[in-house]
Amino acid sequence: MPLNSIPASLIPADDAARLQALARYQLLDASSEKVLDEVVAATARLFGVSNAMLSVIEKDQVLVKAPYNLPVAIERIPRQQSLCSATILQDETAVFEDLDQASPSSVDISLLQQLGLHFYAGHNLRTPDGYNIGSLCIYDGPPRQFNPAERAVLATLAGLMMRLLELRRTLGAHAETSAVLWAPVYQVLGAQLVRLTALAERTTPVAGPAHLTDAVAQEARSIVTVIDQYVDAALRRV
Image (tube, rainbow, N blue to C red; front, side, top):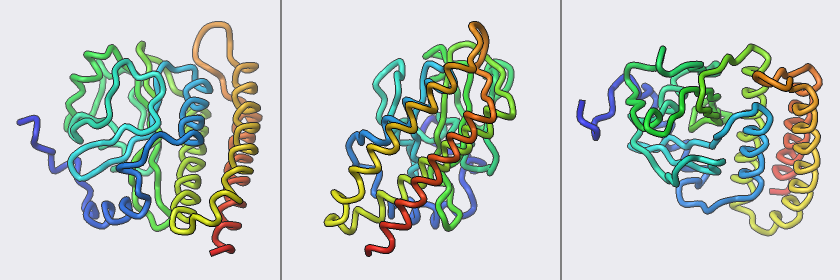
């Protein structure tokens, strides 16, 4: 298969409408943004993995946004070389505990193999009107297990990220409200992410993958609730 050819199996039936939905969020040319970087970094620390990122699935490429500790500087990769292209085809968390043993046949994982990455987990960024525009994903060098509690927390964090993007979209068209709302978002979210990471560290064994307790999941859900409040406040102002 030519490198410039995207397998039809990686293209959702609603891809044209999905790309229109993506355009509303104005992510493709945006620079680094602190709050997004911090959520991705906290996600990596929470699961004890080496790498994480926010992926945005464009027509032909995947934008690497808010990268955390990626082995090389990559801004975009071909859509057919990204596991996130396969992730957006499903609603549940996509997990490949050992890419040497199992990976989507439609995705060329040679780049990940070159980087020495053998574990992947990602959950969709799903818009309120039902389009998967990207994913919050984590990578690690060695294979590892990813239990149901971890999958649920990653899904919750992806929901948090999508709510931040929705707030960002709402404020983007109304710059006069940004200064009023973004400052408390940074303050509250930063404090909650510190607590979330601290909880994870206290429940992580000396060896082996993190064991995420109900307290960790509850803290993650509370962050989503706070962001929802800010989204509602932004919508009332417009």
